[in-house]
Length: 420
Image 1 (cartoon, helix red, strand yellow):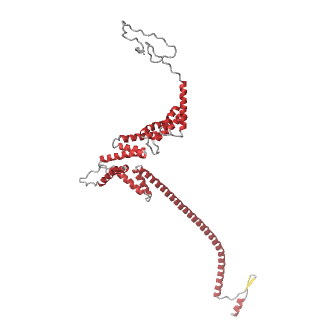
Image 2 (tube, helix red, strand yellow):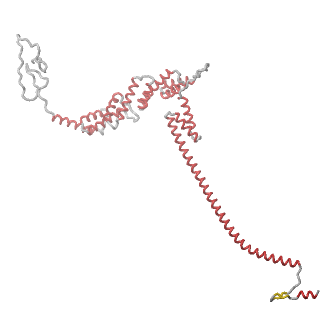
Image 3 (cartoon, one colour):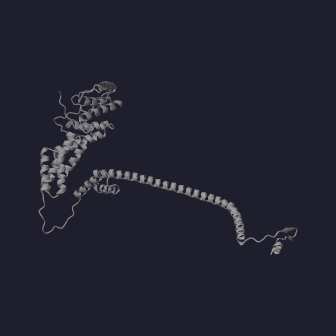
């Protein structure tokens, strides 16, 4: 055994090198050595892998950072776009609300105008349109109710077949309105009487038609006269008289009032445009109704005085001195005017001067020649110059008879003249 061990320990040449042989280690040691070598190799591989992995991780982190940034930018852009969209919707909504409010207000005002002009159907459509857009608009429900009431009261009643048994109609409302209108007429409250009678006519068209018409005539006639004489409302007065004339002919007083009001309005229509026409029309009124006036509170007499002065000024500007003097005198008959008196005096002097100049330029009138006995009278005086001699006509003798026919002349036969 020892010899074998010695042989085993001998060196075996391997080329230039020698390698000593050592006894074989244990199996566990060999495995441990192998495992250590493998681990060292793996460690070396892992170390190399760690270097490449860090680069990959860095590139992966940069990629994710870019992706996240893009996502963030997209989110920001989407948020901004959504905010702008919401802002646009709000602005559009506010604009639509403003437009609707304007339309509602405009239609409500137009509905009030239609109601005042008694265009009830059009007013109803406008108020219903306002309610559809804004049910809480102030006053629209009340106005719609008023329109519906007017439509129902003024609508033409439809003929309904009369049933066999009809209850007795309750006429207390009509009777009360009729009694109230009589009280208004007795008190001279013409407008209240007219309104009450018109309501009675709407509610009960067949209620005492003749009496209601007569009462309407009286109320309209008296209110028209009062409007012309007391209120100076010439248009309203003539309109009331025209309505009264539909129920019956007007009396003389009412007819005269309407005529005077028409003359006043016609004269006022020429005011400032044609003073001669104004003088003509107001000159007719000032004789019968000098205190008649319109809503300007100018009476017919005052308008006639002013128009006469203005007309005289226009005549004086045209050098119609004497005509201007007549107009000034007519104006002064209604009242003196110190501001116009100097002009009137100057116009009077010019009129006198013009008359003197006219008399100087006129030729003297021819002298009248008294006819001698037996001279034929002439229709016109002879022209100036030597008078022609005319022989007297032969006097008939007792034995001679007058000719049966006169001589054919264009002049009338001579008549015997009486000697003075």
